[in-house]
Amino acid sequence: MTKQSINIPDLGHEKPVDVIELSVKVGDSVEKDQVLLVMESDKATIELNAPFEGKICQVFIKKGDQVKTGQAAFELEVVLASQEKTSIHTAPSTTAPSTTEPKPTQAESRSPEPIQTTNTPEKIHLPAPFSVPTPSQTTSAIPQALSASFAYAGPAVRKLANDLGVDLNQLTGSGPHQRILKEDVHLYVKEKMQTQGASPTNAVFSWPNIDFTQWGEIEKRSLSSIQKTSAERLLRNWQHIPHVTQFDTADITDLEQFRKKEAEKLTKQPFKLTFLTFLVKAVSYTLKAFPKFNASFSSEKNELILKKYIHIGIAVDTPYGLVVPVIKNADQASLLDIAKTLQTLSEKARDKKLLPDEMQGGTFTISSLGGIGGSAFTPIINWPEVAILGVSRAELKPVFTSEGNAPESQWAARLMLPLSLSYDHRVIDGADAARFTTTLCANLNDLRRCLL
Ligand code: CAO
Image (cartoon, rainbow, N blue to C red; front, side, top):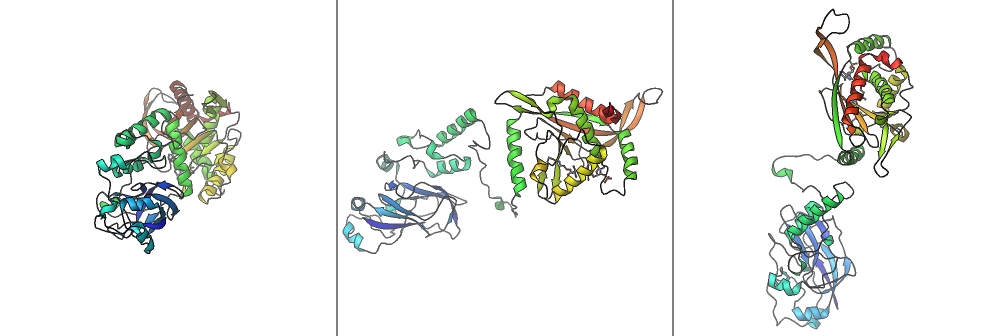
């Protein structure tokens, strides 16, 4: 036995490449030509194959590492018979093996030099002894010895599997000698999607890597931890809750006049009486009449959990991402208390000072983009809640009305507030949603109804 270092082969350039698959571990027995690892440059997938039959005694790199030409990758304890059989000397060579090469004993007596082996489809010129087996060689050379840890597949199939996030060891190939084909990968993904559905936890799909620099200059920005958490939750909620969005428009002309008048009296206070305050009140009151919207749904037990408390979550836009502090028992709070709490929570949110308890226990969320603009949007439900209200910018609109003191119907300029209610259609019917928004609009139109 002789120990042999196996290095990353000449990649043809100085740039590091990613190790996308490590097919062996310390102690594994490997066949000659067995794939030890797969690297991926921006242009090609490159395999590093075992130059001899043997046992892996050291692994110097791991999946995800970036490696360069000449870097030590493995140490292999070469099986002597393998060297005898193939008569391959241990130094890199560009010439074909010769039967007159020194005998293994002689090879052993040399100071072993690192071997650079590879199987590169595109760029790298291989020393003949270590080249890719031809299909006929493959027939005999890819044997039963292939263990579960080694998936037998070509570079193109490995690249496809990597792009789709598929572990090739989970597949049985339908090609000759169980070689995994592209069709096998596609079939596997299709079956997974059908049996498990797509979800963050059982995803078999990942977006292919694209090098955008090929079209121009770019800048990379990492997501904040808040953004990462929101991204995961939004994806989960969007995928697993059947959303429908009901749109409606509330006439808030009178309410806004009242708000402005009252807000002027409070200018010396450390908080603002914003329109959102009134909305929280109106929503809380409406939820009392529509308990299904103030609930959670257990799909496992097929039951609706109706909550006797009303805690309103408010989506707050911060430089670090979206957070949702909660106004507890909003139905019982006065308008001034709601205004103060809103102010405190949104300041804390922007200063990253919210406590976990201040972001938990919400029963219904309001996402207000009205201060920014827009006419409608489709908010994503904030699980475990079953509905969320999106609020867009109020606008003066001509409305045909017969209400008020007008002797007969006429056009009037009214301040109209667009509302977008997304709800979980498993537990809320469209008719319920239309009733909810109609009632909410009526309550906003005349907030005195909330005193009843
Ligand atoms: N129509 C017209 N004007 C509105 C309005 C509406 N629907 N809502 C608010 N405004 C006005 C306010 O009256 C205020 O005007 P003044 O400065 O003249 O008084 C101005 O817009 C700014 O309001 P605001 O945004 O500071 O206060 P707010 O109480 O309306 O909202 C908060 C507070 C925390 C909800 C808001 O700052 C925020 O972060 N909104 C973004 C929420 C978000 O990102 N949602 C998306 C979630 S999904 O990605």
